[in-house]
Image 1 (cartoon, one colour):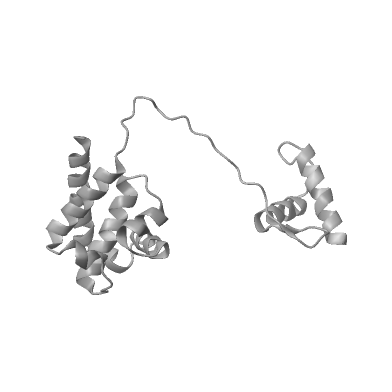
Image 2 (cartoon, rainbow, N blue to C red):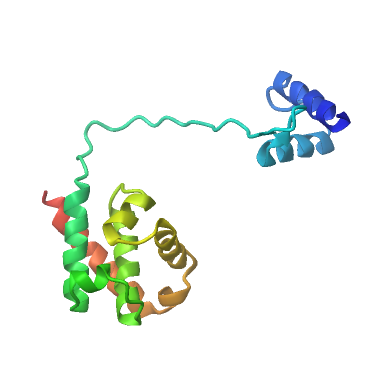
Length: 168
């Protein structure tokens, strides 16, 4: 009960101060940690901090992105480059000759379209966590992305896709 009151006191102080003026460094740390982690109210329920919503005005001069055309172009280019079929890519096999193109397809779709992880996963007949893994391995330069050959192939494929979809 004492911790809950201490938090309420800190929270009320912080709400009154626009830039947290008047808080000691310790109080400031407690306040931020409590909101980051969520805190337990007197009723014992965990309360999460409200999400910050940022609105971005869209530019009316920008072209509309056709996600389906981008995805078709990505599949065509990757499948032609690696000389494999769409059934193999969408299948269950986990051979290296299939994992590399799958990772490239997932990263290309993420980079060149506005599709979410679950939507990409549905297109590729995978779980969304697999798609997250593919994206993270590219960002961290691990797994297949350690090798410069794969990075060059990816760059070439991305260039082809962007040139093809720019025409639409």
